[in-house]
Length: 211
Image (cartoon, rainbow, N blue to C red):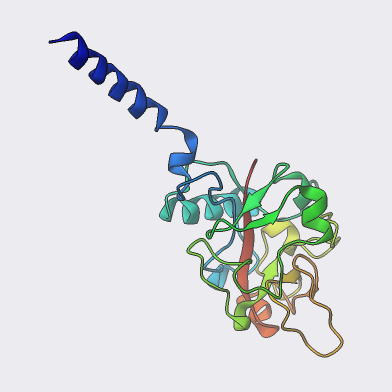
């Protein structure tokens, strides 16, 4: 093999290694890989029972994996009696499936959050807008990302009619006099499938990649 050919082979090998970084498994080419989405599905008959935080995190990871972003650490934006949602998701920044920045950091996320007037921001893992009929997104949180006490479906283990969840809105559609906040707008009717659906929800949650 000539010296020139050998040099070319070595150069190609180093290029292939360099292209195999973490962002390649993130599902989006370029510097701003997917790190935020609303789940495209809810919990169905399980209602508010996600199997605790571990089950909710696995839902986020499995949906991310379907779009090529499963190689990241995914966390559900849910508060419990022992941890606040804001403390689970890293420090940012976060980007949706279209590469749009949702927030630069935790302060920005909880001061502004996704632009609810812009349907291209709070989208699912495929980049699809959430239907208004399912715009209640389960969080169990206050606007600052801390626990909404008594509104976590028993720390996401209950699908009972006796329990409730705090939800936010993925858009600005609201009842008269009700202000939409992305992570904390009102409580659900209950933690059953029907209770989550009654006020326009389906048990969807927000997912963040830890950054």
